[in-house]
Image (spheres, rainbow, N blue to C red):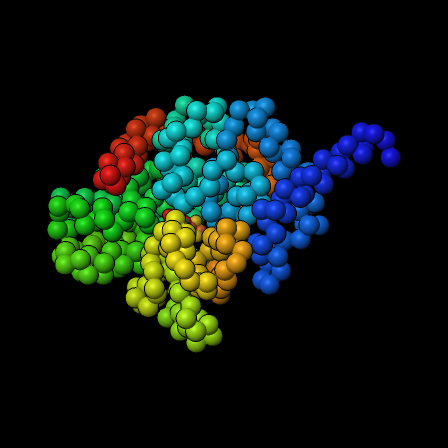
Length: 348
Ligand code: 13P
Ligand code: SF4
């Protein structure tokens, strides 16, 4: 073996050790953890991505639902929708590589329009963002004059541009409660709209929510039977769910909150056993952060988020395709930005 080949082998092994330290307690599939051999396979990509990132003056923002080798191996920042949108505002590098779904990359472009925004997965959809068009929002506004439009961040730039305030899963209840109007239009998540109504009722606030009909194809699958099965099979378990789930599931959970909210709940808890009715990416993050705790995850994978891989992240950094580059008309950016800024203002 030549000296160069030996050096390359040593470098790959060093990278595989680094990855194994991060991913060793993470599930690769049900019941199977990341092995050193898995890390050795990922190592050429993570080395190359971390190198090209510097050369291209790029940062990688990754949603917690993307694959753990991206979140832990190459991302500069990872988090939930709200944290990622805040981070996108602060980026000073030339390029933002957004590992997530299309509406999230659009949000980064709206908030920091002078940057080049790339998404490795290309036009990766989301069953919520794809559930309503801006024309349909305009029709709702015409039918309910005076009712402000709250749009969940899982919406297209065009829908954000038609809305008064954007919200995320972390601030939706507080913002809905703060708005003075008695009638609100909420798009595009029907289950979250029902959860807003239930939460406002709990807070003693009476408001009518006019909703549209979308749902998340991951979180809408959970049923009360899943909560009951977790409690039956794992006595003492704490069950956590997302506000995109059905109200009858949320009513039975120990905690309902955003991806970050669930992370914070686990961080603050002294419990060791958690049932996560959410996307597997969050389970993986928690497994990495708390190797001494047990996280039970019945099912739930977002195929759109998982379209981001190490291979297409490298390719997007090297030579992005047109469908991996976010471009938006300036007037849409300006109007959509207002709804996001209103959210930041109302979250203070
Ligand atoms: P978060 O706002 O919790 O990041 O959720 C985004 C999402 O797509 C949930 O399905
Ligand atoms: Fe959309 Fe659901 Fe995937 Fe989140 S998990 S990106 S809401 S389809």
